[in-house]
Length: 191
Image (cartoon, rainbow, N blue to C red; front, side, top):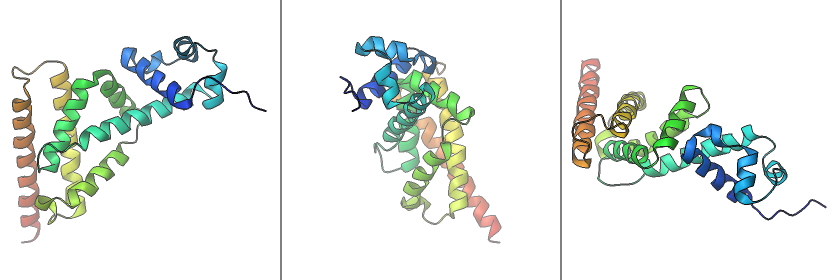
């Protein structure tokens, strides 16, 4: 009979996520989780065969939290909601945001999955229903690149005006320009 532990997989994951918030992914160790939960490392390894498995789960949780923030509707414009969500997440969870970005670069974070869920939302948003999927993907990619950069600039305090209103204007104006370009490009292709 397997031993019963006085912890759960959810508690271990929550503790690991808190450790990431406090100092990054390298902070997640069996010893530190055990210390915080007042147990040995054995229960941790009963839920996660390796620290790599736990860190993979932590990254999945970060992605989930990020997607939740992108889904918050503050306006009728999907792109604006996504951009504001990314900046909000970067402000609120700056360490998690940085860990997410670092792991996107290394391929440890599936950016395509995020894009697919956002793409599905855009397909139903009235300003974008006339655009073919490949054009929407291109717009999404360009806006994601812009938004990641903007979020980084906001988190570092590099803008002279870091207010929500200024950030909203930047996202809205850039989004309008990218979308206008996509429609103009489509019109030229149809000639």
